[in-house]
Image 1 (cartoon, one colour):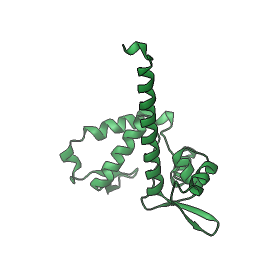
Image 2: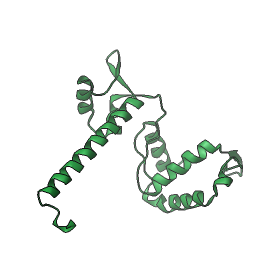
Image 3: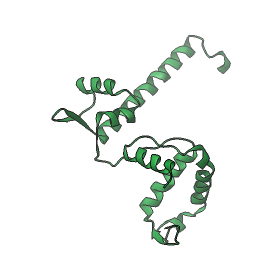
Image 4: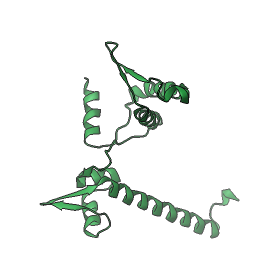
Length: 163
């Protein structure tokens, strides 16, 4: 296992966003193309398999195939991905990383009651579902504010190029 592979595996285990290294972008794009070429009937229970370096094969259940396809799609577009088990409790640092905010700011949100959490001793834990729910609400609020700002600017005569 090379340093890059070990590094990526460590990032995944820490639930840190992972993207495909530049030197693997072509391979990821080719993999996505290959996965998309499979017809839906070929994917559904008709024996998709992983083949190892010694020609050993392992069957891939349909659910795993679709997750793999989605992961490859995200990586092929140059985006990063986080793999997080549902039901998982996160540390404040993991949750802050997922929200792309500082840990100190997250702690303030917790103290204000904006994100549910539990405390075990001195340690705060957050359910992944609660963090993702907060993130979705925050993103929707930001989008609404941006749309309102654009509308206000347009009403004030901004965006001449759109006229």
